[in-house]
Length: 227
Image 1: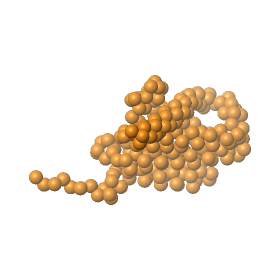
Image 2: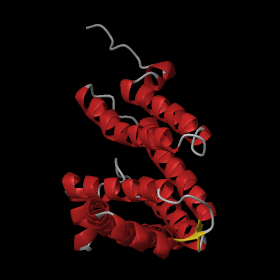
Image 3: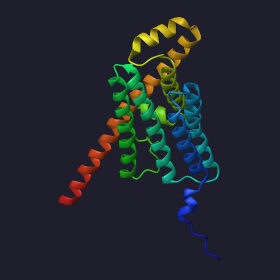
Image 4: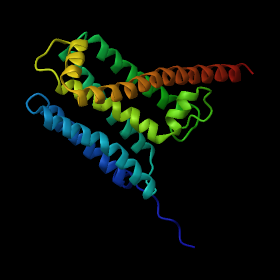
């Protein structure tokens, strides 16, 4: 029987979902280059890149092209794009520390989760079946709920970027004033704020759970060294 053809490195790099990942990176680069001169174009490009996150996952499963490189590329693209937008918001609003804190939480939470996934030998950072926290399990176990929270978070940040007319504005004042001026915008803000809040709670839970996994790994490793 003929040997199965061996996968080459360039084959993995040229997987369809990974090509979509490169396209997402390009979209984000163009978006942030135009963010101050063409705000609405930035919003369209940024959200298109974000939406492609679901598209590359579908192609990966459809064509059996799931890869570790693709998963890392996907997460890095998500984290860097969100971090850049939060850094912009930190310059536009006061107190800017709010957005810098959200940036730190987002990166720390997901980095720890990815690292703890490899330590525990799991195939995906979304595999949290062994978690004892119901919200954490429900978030990763129900893709509709997770999608709502993720979309809410990104839409909120895009809205906050589009709203102010100048820099150094008070965050609460902008939200309250905008909500009073437009009922549809007020309803949208309420919907996305709820999903955003859930995602931040999940980020905290994820960070603590992943940190516990790392600590347990250290304990087990030291116990094996002693025995």
